[in-house]
Length: 331
Length: 155
Image 1 (spheres, each protein chain N blue to C red):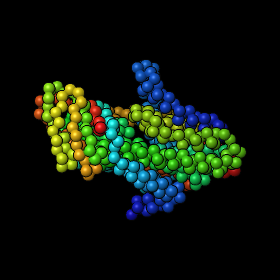
Image 2: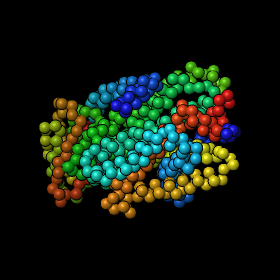
Image 3: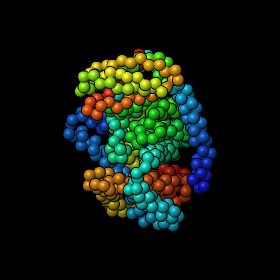
Image 4: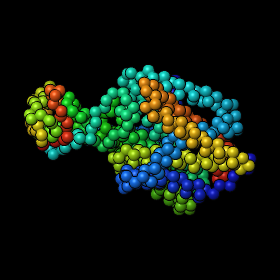
């Protein structure tokens, strides 16, 4: 299949907008105009699309004939085991009575934030591929350190850690996170200085995008309001993902309408289903089990993404190069 | 085994190894800073703390403030854990709202146990802390007394 000619500028501008929208929406709804109905509705839509909507969008890959065939042929382990995660988490939450559950949920949060960082690394690879100035070890370490800061910093915002031995060390964790994040920035600035000639020669978006990636977890250290501190970058991750999926669904062009409708159906129907699983009231005594199923489905999304976007493997590299022409060899 | 090798492979990658080493070094520095006793005048806002009421979704999946310097639950019995050790000798000022005129409540610091009389407004108690502890315990008061912690200060 011929690669679709993607204008990288438009794609990365879309990612930047997707990153900025949740911060602006939550700043408006939580701080500036907390009682404004339009702002509140916009914020709800951002939350839906950035959380359940984006998780649901990843299941679009199962509707793609080539993607599904490849997964069944080459990643049988992942395809088989990922759904079993849902059964495992549902059972675990149904039977949960011990003090281990907060530890399990805390591990889930670590995985979730790590998942965000993996996408950030992916975006860094994409932008370097599009505009040159490939990231060296220093820049990758900087982004990893910012992710470590994100993982540790996010822990102190989520309630389960209060039920673990970490509860008495919230201040320490937050400061370790801040230290790791600051160290990441020092390395990033060192990388920019060392590679300044390559960066100056490259398109300015190369540096803009990588700087925004470094800023990704900054809300954790700026805000005390959880929606701004955690929700802003979590939803940014989700909206970025929807941009990626839009490009995935857009090829082949001949099948554009059907694929676009399928993606929208995934986002709306599966996304609403995922949202419903988070509601406690309808499920009464089974609410914990149902919530376990919800977390299991999100973990399925983590596993699915870890395979589908693994561009070190030839099928994925070719599949994505058809959708993002700047990834194609010799582009 | 596969998981262990996966973690091993992850740590073998240069950026991950450097990030891990840097985080551990920062952790050691923060923990060392965390051993410096609190300065007189340190205050802890307890009014935003909420009691975690068991295994409900709200308690497990909610969010809380990040940069607190300690924690407690809403009313006695409670633990107040500070981020750093309390001074060797300090005056504890406890600000509460209570619907009782003068309730006597036990405050414990390690093995030390003192009674403090709480009513509306701040109550004071002088405590010695030779072991450099950072946790205060507040015992139950008669169940009829509704008492909520608002602020604890070290002077």
